[in-house]
Length: 199
Image 1 (cartoon, rainbow, N blue to C red):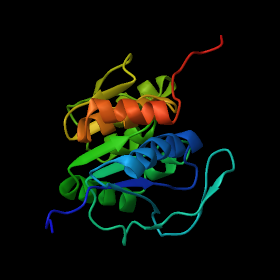
Image 2 (tube, rainbow, N blue to C red; image 1 turned 30 degrees about the vertical axis):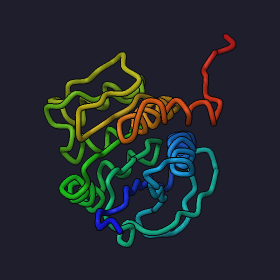
Image 3 (cartoon, one colour; image 1 turned 180 degrees about the horizontal axis):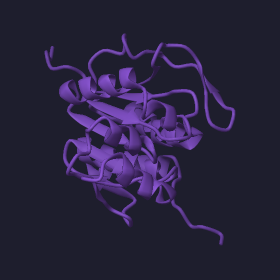
């Protein structure tokens, strides 16, 4: 029996999170977990373990709390209007810094990057966020090397994605990185994600 810790991915949920920022990566990662030989565990958690109401009204009941989620290999921090509160919440920012110290890979979707910037996680690093919040990312930390074009930016132990649906692209990239490109292609086919905008 292996003594190595199982691969664990945690998706944070909070009041005011953008729905697709949460559900897009979750769908990709959960589909991966269902078929991967690595048997990753994908969990949702909120700051206090209670249910949350997302930006457009969807309610989510997470699996656990930030205190009880345990060790993670990957943390996914969504964006949404609720990040504006989290950016000035010293307790949350201290928690992010603590996760930075113990979690091998931090990922963000959309304006989740603003929280990482406010916590000092993106200092001097390349990153991206929703196109309408690029100036806010600079304001949060002027040392961030803002990428205005990328769907996601992989800077090793921190991966940031652009707005909303870009979190799906980022999550597929995480699957390719953590297992293989072939597995990521299988997940993409399984969820039938093949963007072809009608307009």
